[in-house]
Length: 502
Image (cartoon, rainbow, N blue to C red; front, top):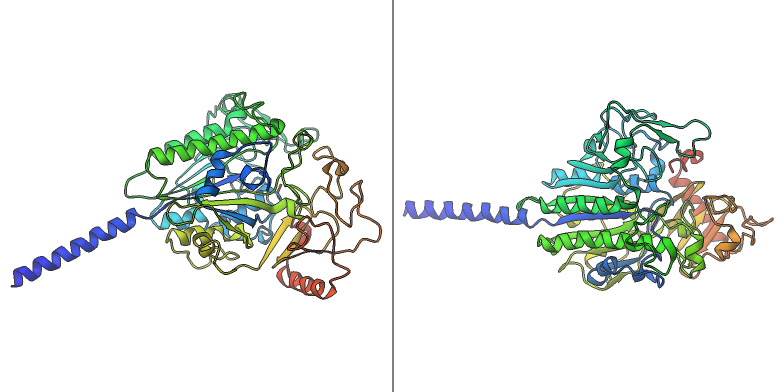
């Protein structure tokens, strides 16, 4: 009798242990893809008609499409900071430059996954700095960087593909670095906005500009194929397209009806498809949560617009702006069998909630102090149509100011776009305002703020998504409420520095 009891206990324990291994093996993989400057209407599943994005569209077909989703910022670096940290970029007390933007001990998304037993990798554009000095020594080990904040491996570009050094980095070292041809970035007057690379010819040759995303896709395929059977992975895959310079490879030029800009997006779609195919080939497509988004809104491009394609659709503004076109972005999420296919989530979603949401979906515990400004929106992914509204308020950033979103209202305490569209409508970086063919009540056809325009801006996005009419003078009670709430949130913030970090 004792022997039988002992055998039963041992068998029960064995089953429990095996069950635990099964549960561990069933943890989903997680892939977070972030495009660079992709406009709200740059995908055919969001309304684009002059270009085709069938592989990205498949995520909407097989998962959920968010229609009121937003990045924190209208520019790259603060948005990526917020995505990975769950912390608003304006809370950083120093400028976002070449030094690493994260503080020692700060818990980022990859660290939460790694602590939960995940293998982690960052591939593509980093753009959150290296080291602790504003002037980076590119010839020394590049740390702190991705590996010091939870990633097991990193392969990609230090910054945007137009900003030197024009190289790939693997882990802590520039790929192809040659001690006899050291690398420097000359930022003296006349070298351009981001300086000029000196040295590193071999390293530059290993990073063909028109193929960066295709090389990143191949790296992702290798990472996926090397997955251990009992260990899930987290992959942060940050694409370069369609950030300027618009430079698709010859294989994709002339393929869209939106000019070279549309060609570049179709190349991006191909790269996404390469990763989707790898998941299917390795029988991991059903075991993977995949989220696709952009770091901020699109930038107007003359040729594309002349051909009938508007990157941000009807939205006012573009990259850099705190107007809607600067930060309303695509968010698509697929988890086959768990997220209902073909569903649409119409309620407000903010990138600051990504770290809490993705780790919650994966069953990873978020430690105390992590994601201080974000919260899990798990229910909005798993039950997009019926899940109650959770987030009703969020902050947004442009190069010249902040905005507060509260339910359908958005408030800006300043005139203009909060970015570079107004008051710099004629600058070489952008189209002339009159060619943008947008209309808003405070700005004339030359892109200048009208005399007598209100000092603040208030829009009802439920009634006026295109932000044609500033209601600051007619909705005074709402204006006062928004003004007071904005002051409460930004108390102690140096708003003069809130636009730091291109």
